[in-house]
Image (cartoon, rainbow, N blue to C red):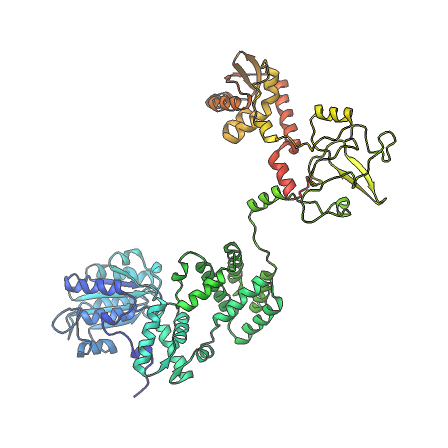
Length: 620
């Protein structure tokens, strides 16, 4: 007797033998019990999950001895004829080779005749999506109202290619990918029945390679048995099926994490020696990174289709990684996978991608960078002056003492750049951070020669004029003076100033415009065409110099916002009135104010912060 492969030998012969598709077998079983059999069925899903097998089982149930029944005898003559493809009443054709309109017309003629030995005449069309549009159209009428003895069963892997008019005339059943656990249990059962010993690791390796297809799993098992004989071992399965072990994948991620170039080169050589196509290696690496990410999520390891030992191995690996770094690695692998199949030398691209991952630095969030600079200001190492100084690494601030900077002779200054309004020599200067050369500096630097080679430019701390005057008069050494809180100074209202005038409002108008921009950008864009012209008590008059009355209407809608911003800034409630103005001089004044605002980005605190943090340079 000729050898029969495992996928045919262990093909399910009844609904209870179908594994991994309980939602379908239960529905069909209930349909038979309730006598609710449809005239057409369409089965869709991935390859090797039981679509065609279920179609044959359904045909057996329809033509069971004693009438349609889900509990039929698979060993009956009619069932055996259907299983072997010898039944005259069950016609199974391939849609790829019988896709024309003539073949479908022949089917329409055949289904008109009553069955010979069975209750129903069943037509099974496998890969039905391969039919032409004309063939589908010829099938519509017969499919909607077939003879009472006729049934249609379709199977396809590409349901989106089947016209909606066909799907709407059938009951659709979607087959799922079979889980790794179900495939492993089925393979283990078959091996026991065949009298072949194996270990769980080998079975899981075959099940993972099957990728949700039971037929693929049985074919791979056949191949492994041919190589290993009566005892299947993991090493033999790896060699027979050309698998890449998980150990190599873990070595790959460890090399990236440890920046191990030597280990990575050796590992890539191992991949190449296996003879596995580079795209498959890339897919395996992507799945490996995905598993590490899942293992790092709370209870995410339970979603991995593998045994507990492998799950814990991924959990331990995830603890050594930051998730954002894994996502970056995954993105690089995904981008490479999209082009590696078209590359002239796929393995060269794989190797360069791996070496690129070695150069990837650890991720850092922008908020961490900003918060870090608050506690440790960045030192501009690009400056030739600072680079010649001996700056302690453990301190982000530099204390300027009398020993480090000798007392200059104000009467006969040694350096021409020292001015009389500089800080007196006896004053112990406060602790100040060294700032970037891109930030705003004061107009009175102190320049002192150190060791006759380098000059150090030190920014003058912000000292109120009154205290500075007292210091210069008394020649005493005061305590370090802290910089005023600019934020409090900006947010403090000017209501304490006696006598609010239109001039003071006009002076604060640019800041008011900025706050309106932040709260209501649409109103801020329009109110730029307005300027304060009159203040009568608590009535503030704004004149709009826009070209249309639309500006005034928009400003009037935003008056509550404008009044709120003015109250927050000035501290006095003002009622805003809007009037239409005219005159080119006022319009030119607005344009000039805009130009001055744009041309002075140093007034923007956010802009200055970005320049300071990233050591930027204004190119203008």
